[in-house]
Image (cartoon, rainbow over all chains, first blue to last red; front, side):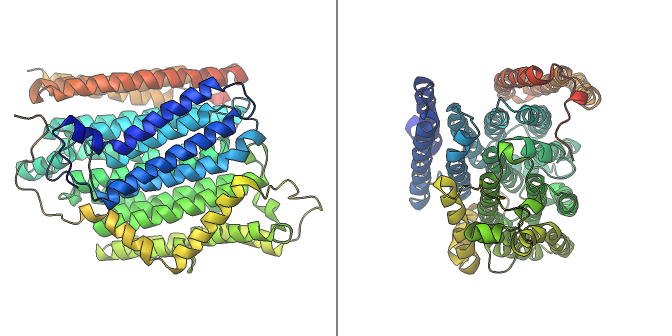
Length: 507
Length: 98
């Protein structure tokens, strides 16, 4: 369907999922305010939020199936498959995070119904990041998301760890946003526009390939994104913040927030600088290589399960950066496949952690999982699937994801990066396999260990669903691979635009 | 026009903000330095808008709104940690490490 963005109706249609989600978020906020004092208000609000997220997913898929486009038009929001695909990833990650929060919030006495409203608004911000075709829209989306996550990190007001996590995330997040904004200012100054398609056109038309301002601008953008996705050397906040936040929020940060950062990074680099790869490819190459190697090496030293998963998510940011560095439609399609697999395995492993541990799960050591296989065989099996998938073991979706990333990066003739990726994966066996060994080969330390582990409720279904999906996508990846390739469709034509695009409202 | 000098002032202010964030240990002062960075960027946008048309001015308003929202949340977070620790000095806020 062709949408006419010059009319208000067309504009509203192009923003349909975001409008729906934000209105639903306001509704959730009203219900939260109205029912605030009631005992089970949190659960009620959570269920309403779940319905809203499912509704938004339906709207996004309706637009995707209907193939809504806007033609050659320099709009603020893109109407393309990449937006639909990434929006779906954010919404699915949020659905999983909301589902794993159900039992958790009651157990940890975090009876704050606004929690779910913040998740909805944060998801709306992510959708603006993945769909924005203008640097300012992406910036506003980034801030909308970040402000919600700052609050979510500190949502447990009785925990000093949660407060410290929120403070650290806030200070470094705001610092990173300022860098991001300075990058936008420099690019705006050099090209005279913040629209990605027009930036691409201006760089080609005015020969700005070696302009210092563009170089600096892109470098600042990369610093800003490096902080947001937790790439080494901008990762130092990540382990502390992931450690101190409530576990569902950690899962949300490690999956949805990271996915949003990468979606916006792909959008900016491939749409705004798609014909001038030489500006950014070297920078991303180094970022990816350092992040993969150091992220996995740091994780080796961890004995605490939550911190180990935090460092593992830094290593995975490195793998995703490899997909960015390959710089083409194949990289984007590998990114979509990998981020789906990564979301499933990360949310799954954090959910297992959240049902085993107590009080923020900060004290669960890897050795505390000893004997889990004999007490809770199915939970241990699911954890085995998550760990093998994170490692990239054949038969799991994690393996297929890494395979597609390797294929993309080899196609882009970057053999060295592929070698680093394989070496980093080998290193990562050093901290994923001890979890499996503890569960299956060590006896329980004492008789009543794991007696607290909850094996019912929404968390159980999250674990079952994610583990099953990982196995299914690992054995039959074709369907998901087709969808990912379809989602990366709009990066396929890389020929420079030769005619200026029309701007809405321009005479 | 004043483009060159404005950009230099903006870059200097931004660098001062970065230096402040990296060197100071008081959460409030770090937060002030972040605000300084944002306003330095605003100055750049205004300077560019002189040459490039009104888009830059519009962006500045967005940035100011975002900075205000961030300030509200940030100060609330600083208060919540002050209730636990009775300090906002980051040297004493170091429970999470390793």
